[in-house]
Length: 249
Image (cartoon, rainbow, N blue to C red; front, side):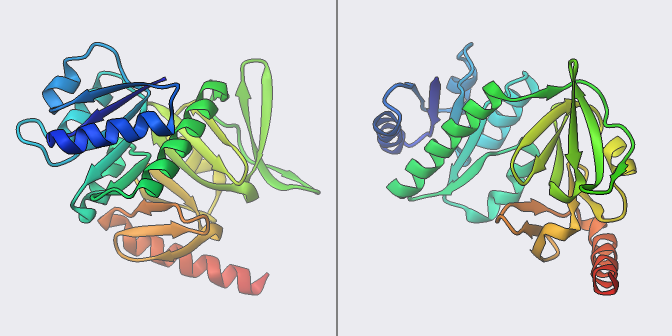
C-alpha cells in the first residue's frame, strides 16, 4: 500500500508523512512539495493526503488531473478552509480534514481509508444494469443485479443512496456497497418515488434523510451529500410527499 502526502508547507508535509508512517507502518510513504511533483510520479498512490491551497497547481486541479488519468484511489483533502468541502464532492473525496489536523482525526481517517481500500479490493463488481423492481411477500420491493454468473438481490428498503463514479454506479446499502457499470439514470427509473435524484451524482432514499438545507442532505449515518441548486425545490416536494405517504400507511 502506498500513501502519498502532498503539501507545499515542508514542515507540515513532513509531519503528516511521519504520522502516517506511525499509524500504518506497513505502508510505503511518499511526500511531495507541490501538485506538479505529485503528478510527475508515474505510480499512483492508494491513499492520497492532499492540501488544497498550494501555489501553482492547487489540490483541486491536481486531484482532477489524477481522476482524469484514471486514478481511483482514496482521496483525503487537507485544508485550512472548511467551506471548500462541497467543492470536493465531484472529485469523490473520501474525507476532508481541516488544518491544524488533530492526531486522532488523522488516525481515524487513515484507518478508515485502509478499511475502505481492503473492501474495494475484495468487493463485487456488477457488470449489468439492474433489472426492474420485483415484489417479495417477505422482503418487499427489490432489484436484481448480476455479477458474472451470480445474481444479487438488493432490497430497496436497505438501499440508502446510490452514486455514480467513473462510469460505475455504487449502491450504498445498510450493510454493503455494490458497484456495477451503468448509468444512475437507469436505476432512477426503476426504484420509484421513495428515491430522489438530488444531484447528477447522487440518488437518495428519502427514508434515510435526517436533515437538509439548500446545499446538502445528511443521512441517518451522518453521510452528507450535496444538493444541486436546481434540484432543491423538487427534493423538498418529494420529501414532503414521502412524509405524507408514511403518515397514511
